[in-house]
Image (cartoon, rainbow, N blue to C red; front, side, top):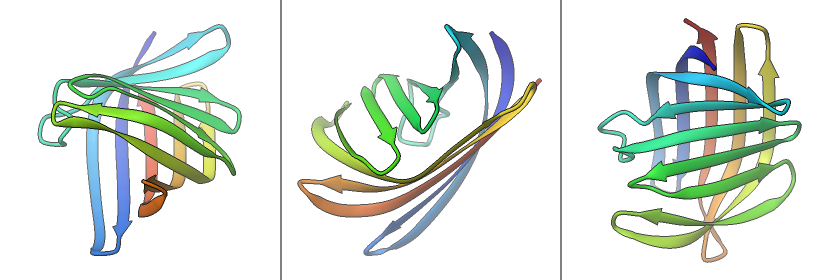
Amino acid sequence: MRPVQIIIKSSQQTPSGRSDMQIQVEGNLTNKNDTWYLTYKEPEGTGLDNTTTTLKLEDNKVTLLRSGYTKLKQVFVLGEITRSHYVTQYGSFEIEVDAKDIRVELLSDKGKIYLNYDLNMAGEKIEDQKLNIMFYSI
């Protein structure tokens, strides 16, 4: 397990407009059985308070795991629509993601993850999401 500084930039495009956000947190990078995991606690004020997020990084596949007040296991596979059950303190619902672009770059002391996907609910696109995650050893 290696401590890392994580910078997350997100952009959401909805029918009502665009929203951009950037957060910076400390987390850990871990290798288990030749698979890398990036883990961090969501900061307060993001709507994901008391939630731990883990990204499982594989070739052409990223799995987002959330535990705490929010629970989610969402798999992103390039060119595929994947479904999951999203549980929040306010209720739960089914979501789909259609991964348009997935890039994972891991170096010895830093890395980048880029996800571009459509978020769908009830079979309809509700937003275009772009996540750019950078991390480096501290």
